[in-house]
Amino acid sequence: MKFSRIKKIELGIIFSLILIFQLNYVAASEIGINYEEKDYAIVSINLNIYQNITSLPKIQIEIDDENFPGLKNAFEDAIRKKASNAVTDDIDLSLIQNENWINVSGTLKVFNITDKERDLLKINFAWKSFKVEDELAAGNVSFNKIGLYQLNNLIEKYSESETVEFYSPFYTPISYEKAAKLLGNATILDFEQLEEPLERWGKSFNQNSLKSEWNMEPRQKLYLRIEVVEQNITKIYLIQDSIDAKVSVPYIAYANTDLVILEASSGEREFYMLASIIVLAIAGISGLIISRKFR
Image (tube, rainbow, N blue to C red):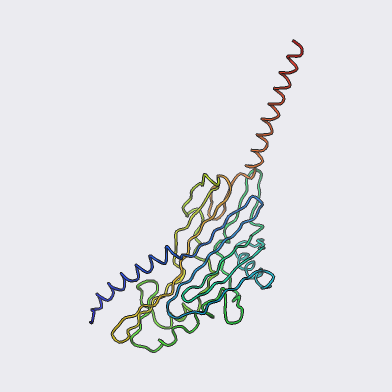
């Protein structure tokens, strides 16, 4: 059965929308940045890349500062491009890879991102869009430059084929050369999609945790669709990664570009208010007792 080009595009759109819908809601990458009152931010990442071009070998690797000495410098160098005094510590990551998925997850702490002026605490989140440039490879596996390692040469066999079409993003046709470059540059520890200032993100106040939160809706990081015609059957292959993000800080705060401002003395003020009430109560009770003694 042969389809017209328009019909083919319509069927492709329906198929891809279904697949994209499922991927966005099942396995979108996530990054959470939670500023603690101890003057550091905890960064939690859960990053997923899906592909159905090949069957990847199953791998699981634990990564930290001890078994990968270059890890701290790789993150610190990337973050310092946006916040020059920042310091990273307690980096703990894992790589899990199976047939269709590559997952990198874990946590790290970022220090020296605050500035206190009188009663105001200013927290710099400009570094949230950092990109780690190091390969961070162990043997033939990388937990960052996956385009150079795990996904390398996946589409090379289509370089001279006349029955293959490449698209990115979505239904924008591209050449084989552009597709190969896009795939080769695939970097999982890339958060440049978070570049938009926090003040433009959706903001809310979480009454349970008593924190101000900024949320970024899912955005596409990597998208490459390949349509291959084989024996009059069109096969669709997809490589995709999308990401959403959340930044949270204690108490009521507001953002000016990427600078979050809150009252630095919020906790102290509550303490002194409570102490003042207790002192006044003790003074009142003491006065009452003394006045009764002299009646």
